[in-house]
Amino acid sequence: MNLTIDAKSPLPVYQQVIQAIKLEVLSGGLRDGDLLPSIRDLAKLLKLNPNTVAKAYYALEAEGFSENRSGSGSRVRVPAGRQDSLRKAMLESEFKNFLEKAVSLGFTLEDIKQLAERIKK
Amino acid sequence: MNLTIDAKSPLPVYQQVIQAIKLEVLSGGLRDGDLLPSIRDLAKLLKLNPNTVAKAYYALEAEGFSENRSGSGSRVRVPAGRQDSLRKAMLESEFKNFLEKAVSLGFTLEDIKQLAERIKK
DNA sequence: TTCATTGTATTACTATTATAATACACTTTC
DNA sequence: GAAAGTGTATTATAATAGTAATACAATGAA
Image (cartoon, rainbow over all chains, first blue to last red):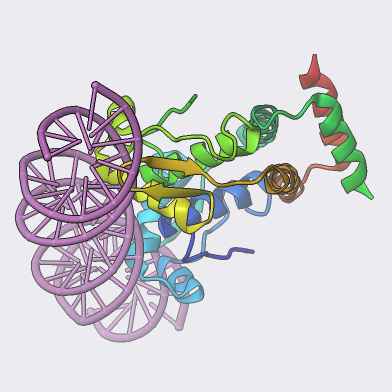
């Protein structure tokens, strides 16, 4: 799992963990049924307190992304169909966010098209 | 000023105020020398505590976006040239963020091009 | 000068975030 | 059954975020 934590971010650490795991699931790096790293292992890896990771795992389960079982670990619970639609919805949402910001900055669709051309190289 | 606060956001309220004012400056809605609303007025408008708004104003001054003077208010201090370069840098940064996320979700440049075509309509 | 308005500062209180140290119950494996 | 590893729960402490109520000093206009 490619997962880094920015302690200086205004976004709480446990929220960053949630986002990182969601992204991993949506990108297909973690699939339905896959075992997440144990709370203690991930905490050690990220140099966080186990309670902080546990909070993230608890939230992920509450959102229906995973299932936690004492003794056997936490498994991803996102069927392929749902993963696919969530992935597409995420892309659209991110793009709309970008467009909104660009427009509120006073840029035109033409400006954005030119930016895209320039960055692709 | 078009400025809304999301109390449920994990991003602290005073950070939201900072972002909103920065955006207003970068978009040209607020220009160099313009007077910001008074701390008390903005607090009343957003239904926040004056201390929360004051914290945002203090941070904006520390970043060189404005100048606060007891008695006469807070004025934007962003020369037109700097505003222009900041505006362009913000667009590029936002676009790169979007691209990074899209790529980490496993989308190709082709996918993104198609999305742009579809959304523009 | 007087008065209202401005940013600034202080103190107090609450909730959230994060760490820390344990303990407990469940599951798997030997 | 025993042991190791799992998620879960509890209690404590500290820092940050936000609200609340005041007070103070500087500014500008009447």
